[in-house]
Image (cartoon, rainbow, N blue to C red; front, top):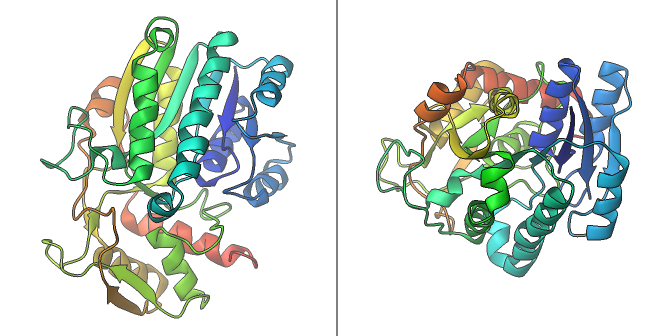
Length: 333
């Protein structure tokens, strides 16, 4: 088995690489580094005393990608490559459409050309938009409220409409909730490129005195403490879901939520982090951001019942691992 990880140098992709190295599974990383760096890959090379096969390429470059497929015996693809900032997707809608949707379509053309039998798509809870009911299960209507979420819906639609994915491929769409944490107590972790748009890396920036204060977007939501509630999942629990999806050989398209099923507010995260780090996190309530929802958490019973997956890490473990990573390298920001 040789697995292609598109976007494999990014936060989630590099943690998939770490898991595969631990389990002695062959893979290659394809990334154009537009939204990542090689730092995590270099750390993994040193830690595992290996040399990860890295292909510098943009998935929109069909000829270069075809060449990569030709040179490697790929039998599985995990498609992480994506621009992912909700706020930035409003500003650069055409770029997001071109990179995320058009790029995926080109990848799908090559996947069919080379008759790849296994495919996993990295989707998002953003596809659900404003939740009509909680917890959210996979049958919830799709209605994105931001361009990034719309990209994910469009890519899922391409998959659903293509008979190849239903008849000739074991296809899994994993809808992530909010991954945080780091691999192996912080050997690698989330490396922000520019100002982070996600809570945990910005919080770490505040603790490490890169930013003066944590901006909490929205303090007037209809939640117990007024701040937004999300389903935070440890990155390695998320990665284990990918491994189980890859281990399943059933043809056809299956969609799975990947979350803990528990909602935690921004203030819950701040308090948990302060407890494990013994550090105070200064924060300030700001207006709500465009494209955010008040509450979002998963019903993950389907993936538990069908693939045997469950989340095993606590929010404290997520905070400890992320904090350890932020302390382990000098140039985190």
